[in-house]
Amino acid sequence: MITPIFMFTIFMLTLGPIKTVPAFFMMTKDQDIKVARALAVRGTLIATAICLLIALVMRGTVAAWQVTVDDLRIAGGILLFIASREMIGQFSRPGPQASGPWTHPAVTPLAIPIIVTPWGVAAILVFMGLAAGDLPRVVFLPSVAVVHAARVVAGAGNGLR
Image 1 (tube, rainbow, N blue to C red):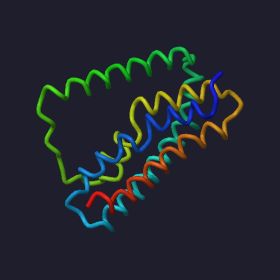
Image 2: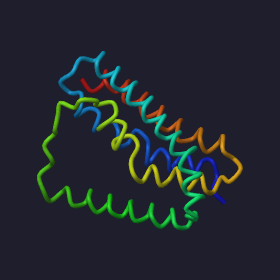
Image 3: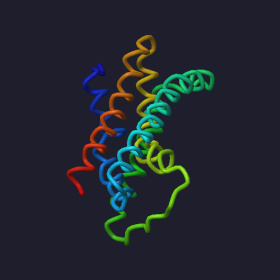
C-alpha cells in the first residue's frame, strides 16, 4: 500500500530542495538577493505549472497509449539508474563549465531540469496511475514539493551569501 507519506517522500527526493539548493546557489552566486528571489519565484511557478500539466494532461496520454503503471515503474527505475551512474561518474572527471547567460533562466535550467527532473516526471506519472480516482491528492503533492523547494531556495539566499 502506497501511503501519502511515501508519496511525499518520493516527491521531496525527486522534486524537492535537496538537489535544488546547490544548483540554485551556483546560478545566482553573483546576483543581487532580489534578483535571486525573483528568479526563485518565477522558477517555482513555472515548475508547478509543469507538474500540474504532467499530472493532468499526460495521464490521458499514458492511458491512450496503454502504458501501465508497471511500465512507468520500469522507465522510472531506468532513469534513476542512469542518473545515479552519472552522479557517481562525476567524481572522476572535472565538473562542467556553467553556460550562460540564459535567455529564460526561470524555465531552463531552473524549472527544467533542476526542479522538475526526468525521474520526478516518472514519479508523477506512476502516482497518477496508482491514484486512479484520487486526483486532488496526487496533484497536490508534487505542487507542495515544488513550492517547498522554492521556499527553501528563496530563504537560502540570505544564509548562503
